[in-house]
Length: 318
Image (cartoon, rainbow, N blue to C red; front, side, top):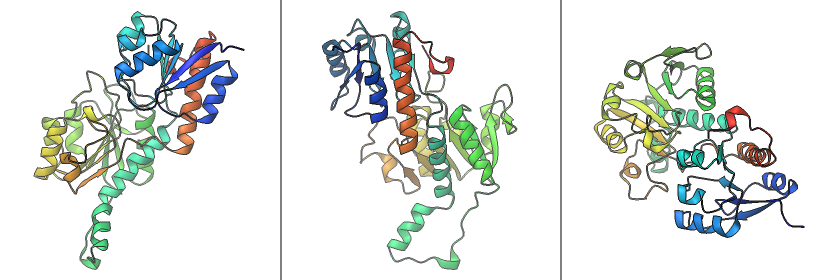
């Protein structure tokens, strides 16, 4: 029996439970290992005639890719960030763009707080010292996380979960919130008023034209000297050159980064040479449980849309 629809996954694999959801609904899966260039995506779309794309990572979903298969009806992000999708083109062609909101919020929040704790207690430095035979002992004086002020920029499901974890560990949480409440946390309406109050700035906003370069030289200078920056959002939210300057000058005491302007981060990149920077390879939301939740929600988004079931309002971004 021929499949009812075709789904192209922009990766070489996808969670088995998600695959079963697609297959049980009559879908056939196609995978795209190797290059994720616009050329490769467009060619594979034309070849498969896919009605759906599962977007893993940040492959370029351009107008050319969207129109390569006339049958395409939905782009389903296996996650939440859709900055690599041409949303205007999708709307123009009547193609839905869906996300899996909140499915990995807990995982990303744990990662963000782990970066905060590791940098506050200088765990990478201490680890290197012990391995080198250095024993600071009672001469060492660390910093406390309890009582530190953590600023949350981007108060969606991930920002909210991060605020809750940081607060549970004794930090004071201050949320950038131009309007409305923040679940009882203290709020600040203006970024330039928020920054001078912080020991740790944690970024959780999506990448948009408005948020691109949101944290630049001016904003970093407003932070108290020696403060920390955590970015588990998107690399371009921070002006990378300004970040490097602030780290080299000591204006920033450290940074925990899971996202970058260029991914993978080149081994020769200046950020990789700075000892006070803790780097992870864009895996904050990649845990076993979170991965399954994200993948199955993504699969259900595809099946719902292709079977004319309305997507939940929070799941559709175009």
